[in-house]
Amino acid sequence: ASPAVTPTGDLIVSSSSPPLLRRLTASGVEVWSFCANPEYASGDCTGGPVASSPVYTPSGQVVAGGAGGVVFSVAFDTSIETWRYHVGDSSLVSTPLIASDGVVLVG
Image 1 (cartoon, rainbow, N blue to C red):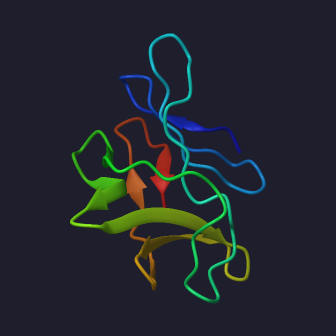
Image 2: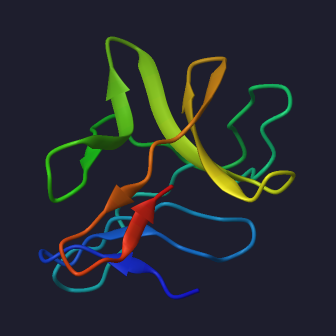
């Protein structure tokens, strides 16, 4: 229910509705916002600002971002209650990402 925060203070996943993916600076200013649309049926992950640089988990896996014009993001699939990756127009069920303290970052 509470947001997952990395050791560097990055907010990986928020349980807000619609779910938002954010990265916070040390001053608390939000500099990332991904995938404000929680629906995935059309493969559309628009509705909020998307930054071009990737956001990483503590293990170095890309959670969201862009490379070569392809946007990566995550959204909550309300029909099966799981997070999904969105890569362009594709939607893939995410593999759970577990932090060292056991918090599920994405999954």
